[in-house]
Image 1: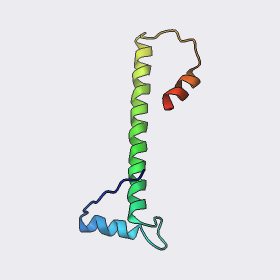
Image 2: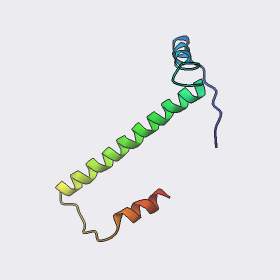
Image 3: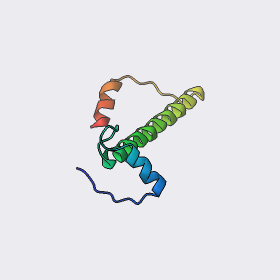
Length: 82
């Protein structure tokens, strides 16, 4: 489901959006441009959270805070994604 969002930009940012949208530009519309930027930012935030989790797990392993695991990790991750 799509959401509508109204934003006001300073003139310089509005000009930047205009330069990147329209015929011959990478993006067909300001909506597409802003949507792509937001998607990139979301992916960056998710990657940062994943890196943090990996680092925490690594630090736990170094400190000896581990448990034996016997199971199918792939199926557990697939269930978590649903």
